[in-house]
Length: 300
Ligand SMILES: C[S@@+](CC[C@H](N)C(=O)[O-])C[C@H]1O[C@@H](n2cnc3c(N)ncnc32)[C@H](O)[C@@H]1O
Ligand SMILES: [Zn+2]
Ligand SMILES: [Zn+2]
Ligand SMILES: [Zn+2]
Image (cartoon, rainbow, N blue to C red; front, side, top):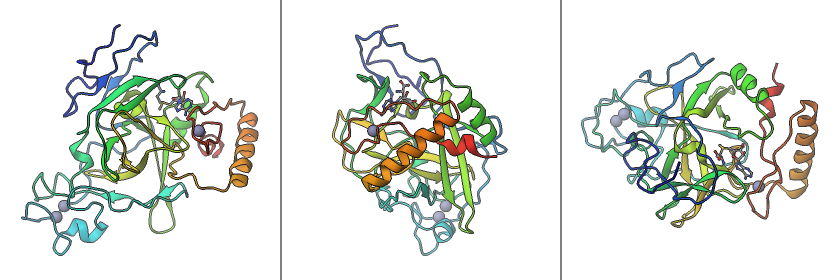
């Protein structure tokens, strides 16, 4: 198969074509079904395409905090330009959700509380990397806080995530991302997304210990969150886009803590006969190994 800039990986399913780099390498292109949205997979009791959240009854083109039930209940996630407001990501691995206006809301499609649901607007290109397989780069500059794309795929349950992770061979790519959110009452909600067989352009994003994107769970029509990726700083055209697979952003753990964590991870992965993959992100704070969410495997 030869790759051409005119090829749209999404087959017209995104608003803008997702390009594939014209490449002279012999790297094979993976087969998968393109889906811009999450789909229901084994162990996920809710269909992510069902509208299950209530809407507001605003008549203005764009919702205002004073009289919008969505914004009053969940707070404002974006400024009037659709830029994410909470840009201070923590390294705790937990995050609070953002809620957008949805299919039941009476505001217009231009409401500033509709961002992730609009889909990919930037010109992105899937490109080959030297030592990390395929990756994604941006063909245009991206300002800090801008929505880039979702990490969309099959939403699966913990048991299925565990089964899939344990049946993977060491040399295979791992695509399962686990996201944990505080549910307010001290409980934690977990979501597992696997875009290996069905997914969007997000499935090609590589990990970096010093990433330029961060993941923010966003709810639109459904209680099932969308794993949205936003620019963590101003990004130049042609830069490769990466995020931290652990969900952290700035990786500011003290060096001693990082190495203790690394040793614990290596020990735990040996126990399970799993081989950790070396991280080739090239950052000066690189943790040397790709994150492996052992909580998926360890849990009873
Ligand atoms: C979500 S996929 C990313 C796309 C993948 N590179 C591809 O060719 O399809 C995750 C896999 O990419 C590779 N990968 C991602 N980030 C990496 C890194 N920093 N160093 C080495 N390999 C990486 C690993 O094989 C990992 O399991
Ligand atoms: Zn409203
Ligand atoms: Zn609304
Ligand atoms: Zn690294």
